Amino acid sequence: MTQEEKKTELRWYGTPLRVRYQETDQMGVVYHANYLNWFEIGRTDMIRQAGFNYRSMEERGVLLPVLEINAKYGSPARYDDMIIVYAAITDFSRLRLNYTYEVRRVTADEFQNNVGKVWTQADTLPGELLVTGTTRHAWINTEWKPVRLDQALPELYAALSFAFTGGEGKKS
Image 1 (spheres, one colour):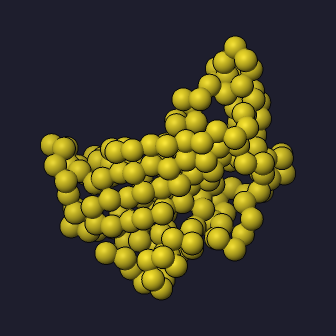
Image 2 (tube, rainbow, N blue to C red):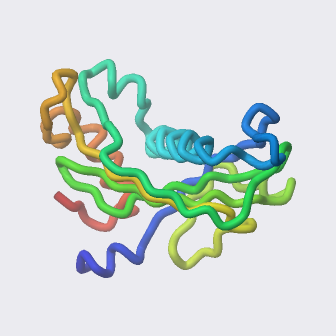
């Protein structure tokens, strides 16, 4: 599979959340910066679903700072809405990791029945699309020096390779 074909084969991991009152502003909608927090929740939960604990990654000296973040707001979420934050890896290497996100408002049934499911490009993600976004990251150590993930934490490299490809070969 070519790099271009791989970009169209996203594997989406979903994290259900309910909008809390404190996340809304005076206009009754979710304050824009909260979507960035939700991206992080989706990203760390995706790593957990891939079989690796984010805390243990950091305890072992591997960090993943955000280099760039983008969000496009389409429609607001409101207090008590049930949403799912979908996260998918768009590019993965020994040195970098990039994600795309979709925040969607869902029904109670979709909220409860899609926990732990992984969607592929062939699937239609449930819910009304509210916000899309992307983040770019680099693997570093606790001294803020770049590290090769395949050498620093090979188990995480393997887990993310699988999350990225679904087991279809490995990307270095």
